[in-house]
Image 1 (cartoon, rainbow, N blue to C red):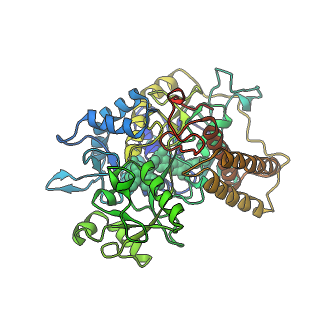
Image 2 (tube, protein in one colour):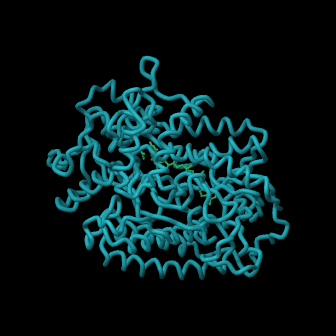
Image 3 (cartoon, protein in one colour):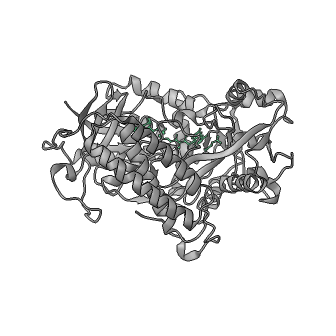
Length: 528
Ligand code: FAD
Ligand code: SIN
């Protein structure tokens, strides 16, 4: 069965949903999402959305904070548009029903690392859940939008599927939609589209320890790479400094906003250590705090550090962090009286599918926004709470060029059905699960917070083997979400390792012991 939409949206997080609502005024929209629509990184966002919403703040300050965090690699134009257009996009979110925390009638603005003033709009400590709720409610009411839950995008359709030879050097590759696995009926369907938006989010699951939910396997990035789209800056993986250290917690995030409200980091001897690493102490940008914790753990041989907010008024803590408080209690930790054991975990992909300022990728008909995209905003390190903002702004900026593009094209009529002849249902599931576990461990041990050329070489050798085994298995097997995810994670790992190996300096999130300094000649995007 073939579906036809004017606009095909891959992903139902903040980027996909906010874009869908806008283009739906101009045509039919199909949203494809691999689990329930709510399941996304967006849904787990805690801290909030950074935006200039008070007289005590200014665009110039937000721009400067973003540039400072980005360590010389931000695209200034991208920073300008996101900061200047962001507040209006946040107000539009409120107009469709998102409710944010207020104090005496005004928005309560939180503080996070790297921000020079309080500017984080939030809904207590479950901002993403509130944003996702409001967007999904609006999407479900829209007559032009169809949502396909449990539909897994497998490949983008390009000239390659029309039998043409496509290389990365070819300038005129088009995207005509996607092949999508209907997980319930176990059949791959063709979704034809005039415009396709890639909004499949990040890839934190490539690492053993991550704050990201299970969906974050980098599928969109890998599909775009295979379709020969240009990919940028994949070496810049952000590690969040404070995820809960507990065997059953699956890297539950302890928001940076907790430090914004006064929490202090201590080693297991109870000594506060951040002031010796940076004058902004606990509110230094994330790369600095994560590396400081890593340094403490390695030098002291300890499994975690403490994050302590027990000195802050109990009612204040309960009011601002009800979700974190309740979740920690289930692990026997009362954050109003006890310090919280924390470690860093992979959190955010700063690089991605390269776009221009209107969300266009290097493939005609393919737009991208949200975490899967690299717009130039984050440079070498993302400023806290700038990603929900970026998704909103680019979800809006990509709208008009998408509408214009759709007006000038028709659906392809010559796209063949998915061909799975010669394949069979995989029997050896252990091959998938073992390779997945091995990949995640290799990435954690060899391509983590602190890197070295030797470790990158080892990681490259190991992932090459995993790639060969998995491709061989894939050629013989019917597609399944598990197999596709493994294949995609290996592609993402390759891109991270490759990009990290190409950068002969340390900058922002990429710290490599062989090249510990930043070098002016290396101050450019890494393109693959
Ligand atoms: P997502 O919200 O991740 O959505 C991606 C969608 O694509 C999902 O619906 C997924 O199921 C779907 N998908 C993926 N692959 C496929 C496929 N093959 N086929 C079909 N569908 C697919 N940022 C902030 O700015 N502020 C915060 O406070 C904040 N807190 C965070 C807390 C946590 C715990 C985490 C993990 C992240 C946080 N972030 C925060 C980052 C931010 O949440 C994400 O960058 C942002 O939500 C990404 O939005 P997105 O729409 O691009 O992707
Ligand atoms: C957090 O709440 O600490 C996460 C904020 C972010 O990732 O921007």
